[in-house]
Structures are given as C-alpha cells and as structure tokens.
Image 1 (cartoon, rainbow, N blue to C red):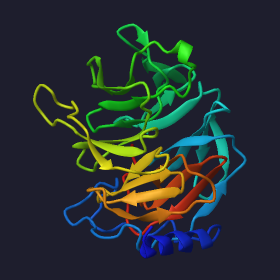
Image 2: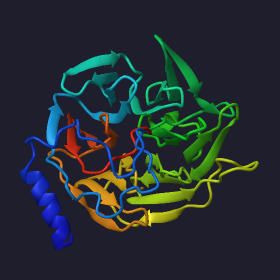
Image 3: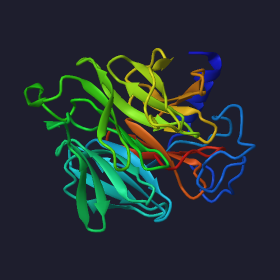
Image 4: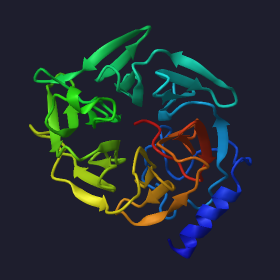
Length: 323
C-alpha cells in the first residue's frame, strides 16, 4: 500500500461515525441529474474531499444488494439469510419492503423503474410489479440456474447477471459452468461466459457509456472487463474479457461513478480504481463490505452493505445511481 493510500484509509477509519457532508449538496461536475457524465464530467482523484464513514443501521444478518430509487427517494437493500428486502429513507429509519424475498441478493432497476432481484432461494431473476413478484428467468434451456447473485441493467433494458453457486449445494447444480448471462428485451437468455466450476462471478457493473461490463471474480481475486457490442445484430454481446484488476482480496459487489471509476468491495474495505485499473485508494469500513451503490438526490453518497450493517460516506463527485 502506498503512503498516500494508507493516509486515505487511516483518515477515513479514524472518522467513522462522524458527520459527513450535507446530503443536500448541489450537484455539479458536469453530471446530469441521473448521475450520468456530462461533457465536462470531473477528472482526477475520486476520493478527494471524501467525508467520514457513518453507520446508518445495524443488527442485520448479512446485508447485500443496495439500490437507490430516485423516484421514491429511498434505498433498498437485502438481508440474504433473513430473506428480506429492506427500505431506508435518508433521515429516517429502516422498514421492511418485502419478506420473504426468496433470499434476494443483488438488486437493480429496469428502465421503467421496476425492481429486479437476483434470488438465491428461487434460483431466478424476478421483477416486482406493484404487489406482485414476477419471474423473469430461472433456467437455461430447461436447466435451472445456479443462484443468481448480482445484476445490472443497460439503458435499453438488457439485463446482465452473474450466477455462482453460493445459494445451492453442489448436488443441486444443473449447469456445468459458472456463468455471466445476458437477457435482452424479447430475446433468449444467453450465457456470455461459461466459466470453469471453480470461478465465482460476483459483483457486476456497467461503465457510464455502457460499453464495458465489469465482473468481479471472488475466487480468482480479479476484476474482469468485457467490451459490450454496441449496435448491429450482436448488440449487447460481450467480447473476450481482459483483467482490469489483477489482484484484489475477496472482490464482491461494485459501483461506478460518473467518471467511470470503480468502487469495489473487498476484504479490506472499498477499493477504488480508475477506468484503466490504476488504484486510487481504499475506503476503510468497520465491517467487511459486500456491496455498494451511489444514492441520495445528488448521487454523492456511497451506501455500503457490510456484513451486519449499512454504512454511508459522502463523496465530492457523483456516482451512477442505477445499476
């Protein structure tokens, strides 16, 4: 760890529990209202001007899947063992959004603002429509998925999701690979990566231009980057991956900011990387984090799910609030 990285980590750790910047700060840096980069989107260190890590709520079993909903002004997140999706409104407490949730893990929103969930228990991707939960996909050519873990949605509604075996026993596995899948609107489910059985595809995210898909492989301790085909008959298909981050301890969920920097949860905190993989530093968190997402009205709060608790930290620059 460099001296500069250590200073960032120690400074943030020392400030845990203090008050961060106001969540009502005015957006800037050329970012649009939805957090997408504008023509003069910020450049440079995304950790410059960072606030202090704060505890939002605790006492959960194992929290995951944070997703900000701009229309409702709230954050949803999951507690996998408790089979519950929780709702947090800034300035308020935490309430139950849905229970049971079939052990929902990662959450995302489709272009219509409907909630998508990767469910361990039901081994499927679901969509919430009003009071109903609708199955989106649960099998590939009649073979059940392993246990969908995390997902992200492109602007046209294409869903990308990872499918490791964390929610099942080996005897229950029907697929002969660990997959990264693509489901285009009206199209069939496509296995974009049929990885070896010892792979563990986990957190997933899209670049601001939606032309690169990032996937964390927990077992390999790497983050891979897949070029996304834009236009033509293969629109949305993934190219061969490159290794963006070659060594990171226990990479899990991730989030992207408006400049394309990656915020990747890891064994030692939230590690932050430039789009080319250059490390910026590490945000220390009191508990080992599992996932993170940008939220609040200006998209400058990073919400972090970490084992039994939900944390937040204010940043000077906005992130992408949708996954």
